[in-house]
Length: 170
Image (cartoon, rainbow, N blue to C red; front, side):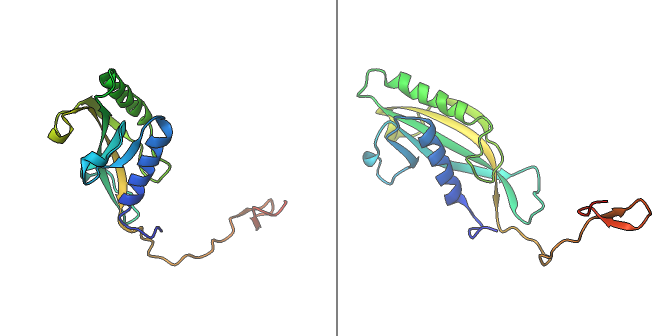
């Protein structure tokens, strides 16, 4: 059982590290800073944009949610090829998402879309692409209502019909 029943910080940290390690040349990977002027570009800015109940119950006492993530690729326009670079990084993210679990206990990512993004007016002076995916993550505490007890030994009938421990030579 983990100490944090709502592991969003751990999920964000794993996603950030996975993207940063997989795509060289990014100056920043993380959540949107409070003041956009402080962000270094090229950047990938992550956002949990919503979640819904997942279509299965893990049976552990945890709640499975289908989380919707958005990663905004932001490239400064000071480079002549800023549109190309932003599209290229978005494509790299789309490839990275294939069967991606970020090294933690979540279900594999499901790529949804990647496209130019004009939804944030504060980013209008930059080349921006949004990459969206869904991923089932688990929230809440894992429950096991029974005490942890050592198991018994598996026994099978021996040649003469008496029980024999599977670990004993016959």
